[in-house]
Image (cartoon, rainbow over all chains, first blue to last red; front, side, top):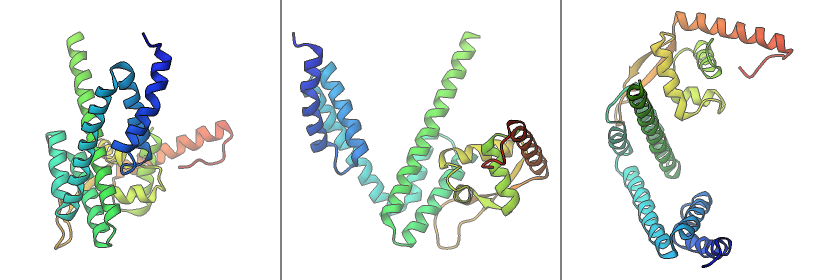
Length: 151
Length: 100
């Protein structure tokens, strides 16, 4: 049996290189190092083939998100954001609608000024905020249900 | 007493009049964040301290109407109370003015 420490040390450089090759560079330093850590962990607890599969899925997923954002920017960023928000939050309340309206306005402003990079960044930030809102709401709803169950 | 974030929002609305969420973020010099400002504004509106109205997007641009916020009379009272309490606390601690 390979000692845990040496197995980890052996898998780390491999995963780092793998991560740079498969996930990183195009997606920024933070994502790269995060994915390197994730892949090293997966290689440690499972095996390198499993880590490689996860890396590929992650790569495809990130590409899809980037592609979706680029398409949305070229067409109508607002419509894309609205569909994401309504899917995540399932309803349109004051917080969500205000967030979306302001983000769309900022996207339109950036596009008018020819700052497509900034527009993409704002759209991504918007999606993250809406995602966070949805997660927090789900968490509160779950804790509320647990509180009711416990009495 | 209003929280520091709520006090900043009330203070900005008191000084500037009507503002959008994004304008509040910009004028707070990074103190307010996108992820929290709308939740705080919603809470303040539920408490009757701010009031909002929808403003349609300019002609030719797509997207839903934006929400324009302004402080109410109760909001001004809450702001005055909050600032007074904060300066009282600052005085007790020997601090000379805060970020708010």
